[in-house]
Amino acid sequence: MAAKLKKGDKVVVLTGKDEGKTGEILKVLVGRGKALVSGVNLVRRHTKQTASTEAGIYSKEAPIHLSNLAFADPKDGKPTRV
Image (tube, rainbow, N blue to C red):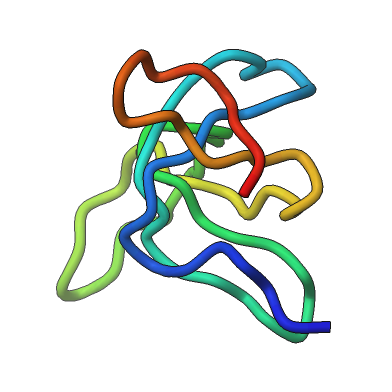
């Protein structure tokens, strides 16, 4: 099944903790049926210190399933079907 959502599309989250948030697709993971959306489904990662990086906690986007996303209407930003 081909995914209709592509990199760069503006989408709205339909369900979950980030319901109603909008963002732009950064990457589509076709084999897993998921996508990375900017500013949505953020998780905190703890890193150890290495020779090139410092220790710390940083946030990054985690994949969200494509079925939980819908295109954002360019006029009003509400979820829409194509």
